[in-house]
Image (cartoon, rainbow over all chains, first blue to last red; front, side, top):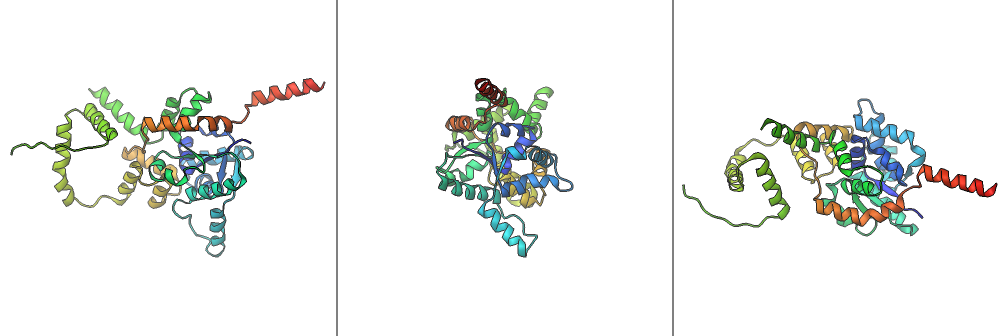
Length: 181
Length: 134
């Protein structure tokens, strides 16, 4: 039985920023209902960002290849919305929904899933999920994608993300300063 | 005014970051620490930081997630938060190279197992099966 790769919303936006979403299709990828709402469904709204639109288009084009898991958290939010339709997602709902999915998967005794979180997440929460899954940061994911021959270079992939992500600004400033010297 | 010597301990990666900063911007660690210390009193009198910048700064430090920052800023999706970070010149939090290497090593086998058969391989396998049956 093949383990599944569960990306959180942050890495989805990072991969969208670097036009690297296709990498997810190389793996058995699954998302939670809440992550779908906060990352993918936002791409349908008027005025959605480039990344959100890209995420939505990617999902629509590859819906059959990406598993979507209903979670208890998602179910509870939907239940709340029956009485209060405008109930927003609570803070950290995506992360909590992944934890909810992990609990469900632990009952099935299958292989440990791989959870892809944004890099900063590890500083705050890694201990909470230790043992129930294999945690991987976006940067480590790219390093392994290179090792598996899926991308030519993790460094280039990071640079692709950086073109839209804030690392780009810092690097651009350093380059500009070097040019001014 | 005379000068005094102090000793203190800091994390190695913080020191490496400070040294890299000095290397890029010139000066010395002495001057950098003196400048930071001398600003302390002034900062207490300074007006409050713009709340949205505080949120972006917390995101840059890894204190809050991208989605939480997006929620606090009232944006409809996280793409806008990424672009605002870029405009403000704030980097996203990055893990140390050592941590990335360790994580990559710990997760490589699982990622290999998670790989789907490539389409070429699947086609070859199907052809083989058809050939065997004919």
